Image (cartoon, rainbow, N blue to C red; front, side, top):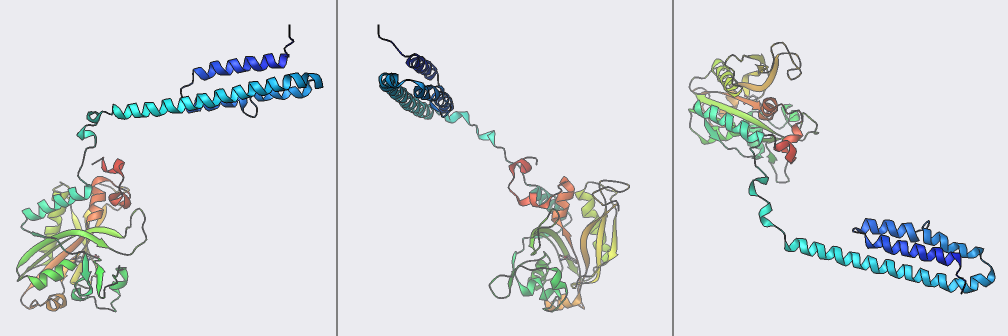
Length: 347
Ligand code: DAH
């Protein structure tokens, strides 16, 4: 009987093992692992084939071509299996497409919710409308005159520095830096008396962090009549905050403040709605800064064509973004106009 080299026997056994293992594969990853196990650099067939170098010259001559044959068959088997696997996987994908169930996705899978900004704006609109204010939707793209000059902030006024402005390439045009711009339009367009409120976006060219943003919202009211007083304004502001925070005992306090478009000017603080003795939100002071207010400066009335000897006006401008953050305990302003669904779904 013809002598069969042990090397060939071992290689044939490995070939059979390989064929058996390839039968069971289901994924490309499994296929790669088996290929590596047998014919990778450290694969069993690769290593076994190298043992040919230890045979005598005579044996090499007879065994060499058989080893070659076995290796060729191994390669073909691997190639063939790979092709089969790819075809099968492609067919599976096609099949899945054919049986794609359009009814599996229900319309309520993605529920919508109201943005915290919208909620607060709706609350404030309800409160101020009930008090008799008319709601005005002002302009964000504004003229230098309405945003600054008409409000007693001429070109070289230092107050312009605190309003780091986004100027447009159009001459004299800018993104409004505060909602007080609406005051100058209303004073020019309407005949007093009237009481208006406005809410919306304002822009300042500021570096962004958790408490600052280049875009934030403000909330403004103005009342003009023959007789207006600071005490009336303070009472209105206090009432608005009491309704907003649903707390009838909420106190407010005033401090002197300077704004070129009011005289006298005040800053209004509200009692922290979240604590009695100081907390992290009010920085342990029990008070929260709400914004600025005052009696509209006679220069503003005159610049807008209103007789300042006949009429007095009072106004305030408060941080709406701040109110939203306070009301919902949001500690990073950037979340408010980011598009994180995880954040938005909470409301
Ligand atoms: N516009 C001011 C600002 O953005 C806030 C302000 C202060 C508005 C006093 C007013 C006011 O109406 O009377 O800082």
